[in-house]
Length: 183
Image (cartoon, rainbow, N blue to C red; front, side, top):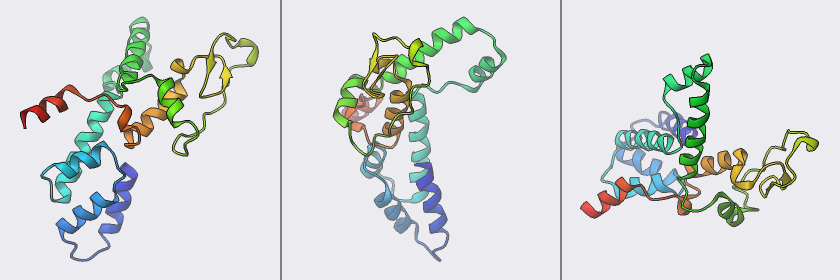
C-alpha cells in the first residue's frame, strides 16, 4: 500500500492544478479491494489529505493487530536482556498475530492454495536428517514443522491480509462492531 501511495503522489504532482476531490477519487479508484478501501468508501472523507491520514491510522492498526512491538522492546532484544521473558513474549505475539484470523492457517492455505496471490515458500533450510519426520507442513510440502507452526506461511498470510486480500478470514475488531451498532 505504501508503494501505491508513493507512485500515486509521484504522478499526482505532475498534473497541474489537480483538484483535491478528483485526486481523492482517483486515489480511491486505484486502491485494491479490501478493508481499507471499504472503510474509506463508507466514510465521509472527500479529500486526499484526509484519506492519507486515514491510511496512516489503518497502517498503524494493522501493525498493532500483527503484533509489532514497541521500539524499547526491540532494543532490549538486541542487548540480550530478559531472554526468558522475550521467548514467552514471542510465543504470545505469534498467538496474537495468528489470532487475527477467524480460522486456522491450514484452512486458509487450503482455500487459497494454487492461487497466484500466494507466494511460493522458501525451501526449508534445516538439513533433512535434523528435521522432525512426524511433522508435515502443507505450505512447504515437506517435513520438519507443522503447517500451524510455519513462520513462512504466517508471514505470507499477514502480508496478504495487509494488502486486503484475506478480508474474509479476518476477525472483526470489537471496536468496529461497537461503532456499527452506535451508528
